[in-house]
Length: 208
Image (cartoon, rainbow, N blue to C red; front, side):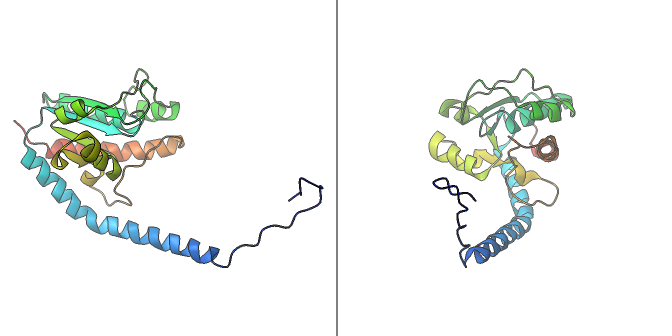
């Protein structure tokens, strides 16, 4: 490192003695959290399916994520396609908490295109309390989003559902990862998980 004042090499800051312990503790915490998520997932999955049964056939399903440019537009498109294939008349809407009128990133468009979903014309929209409360079921990608729906938008807790809770496979985390800024492979991995979760959702939605 060069000292900007005199051009001579500057001594590097010593590494605190506790830094390795902090990194070790962080890895241990993340490992325990993943283990807890895997253990709780079957329970959460049964609970999600039971909640859907209690809610009855939905009139409208709203799908949301933070920015409505990667996860929710893809999930909404897949959900609409599967509902149409089963001749089910359920309205599918979508939105986000941030940044209206934005297009989906190129990586998201490419990953979606490989799965037969065209996001080229998509533009993000914001949810409102009225639109969220009007939906029979609101699908979210992260637990924090479910909390915001209940606390800020007045959605009854029973109508806010974590999509990842329906995953039929063992999971590493409850939230469905946001692929924004990730590589094509990252987007593809997120969309693969959304595919199987939406398929599970279709199987769990009661018929009218």
